[in-house]
Length: 593
Picture (cartoon, rainbow, N blue to C red):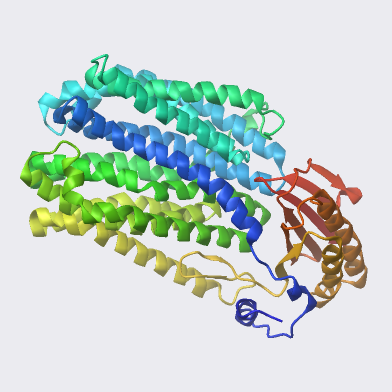
């Protein structure tokens, strides 16, 4: 019998029909939920380590060295954000394209994107290190906001950061590809090692070694050196598990860098614009609220970075999984993945911000602040910024979903709006309300962005409602379920495999395929499904997902399981192909006249 959800899908497509045999195998999504868990948990751990490291960077400097040095670290944040921009631009962009290529079973393309991107990242990071270290004094002059006494501190700190830039940029970029190679635990381990060593080294350098602010910067370099060592060792020792390989690339492949750039732009744009906006925001705060306001905002922002763990963890699951499913054109699983991650991240964020909302003054005082004015301003800022984290989580997940599904214009537009709109709101509100504008602006900016996203989604839905391929959904725009597409789940048994294969005959005939194609589909799919079941013989409790699509006079079937890994191979004269994608196997069957 048709479930209400599936009945609603069918009605939306203008097809009210009787229950069919295929609906006996209702899609349950359990396999995808397992993959979300496999990618999200390591991603959350690594993001927790990174955000905790960023939080402790400022906290340790404030408590072990001094508040002036803590301010220098805050003013140097645009430099760190610039490094993040580079590795997100090419690491995330390359990761999404590699995942999509793997989903489309194009391993050669995945290897080329990986090799070309990492080669370019190495050269670019070396250039950044040389130029940045050479002009660190001039860069410090720009970052000091007119506070000449801060210039030497900033210059000392960023000079060491620039020298270590190749380590940070290359290690984090490569860890994205490790994740796209279906090794999320290894990717998490690399980043976790880098950040744990970073914090321990900082404590040692600023404590027993008395290195001051230079020790804080050197701790970051030491951490990423440890990350590089682990990356090199694990990469060489995982030859049987990994799929990506370094291959030769030619001049004709250089155009792929443009696609990597545009694909990664939404992720990196926020960091790039954020570096500029951070500089401008600090100047605005100094002019409106003075030095006390800057210290209060520094403390509040530091904790907010830590509380944004779920926001930063979301792409760790969405980018590789949705990217691969986009290559497979599996719209059911794409939207299921995004919605599952949305639920986890919003609920988790609400739980995490509660202590800060309840005890903000104690949190601000924990950064070494003693001035009552600083504590009072910081408490209000902290409460507002924590509430805004929930909204930013939703915005970021939607943007990453658009990015992974090839909607470059929408994802770039969202990314380009976030920081400039936040600054514009702060400027306008501060001009009208003074210091109170700093409290109102963040939430106002986020609400405006959500409204604009909703409007864009409604526009796409309206403009495609009569098209053959239509889109719907208030936020997570996805392809509408059509009469010639079905997604089902079967149990891991030969009986279920044979029974499902038989249902495909009626499905093929109903959608205009010939009797010959329908019979051939039943034969080939039955054999392929039986092979998948046999491969999973020891896992009778696991389910197998099947997506059936009639497109361009051909029946296309994808059988997905997360059992023992299939070697990339083809059967039945190329009509059946097997590939390992993101920790699951994709068996693709295409039958035509």
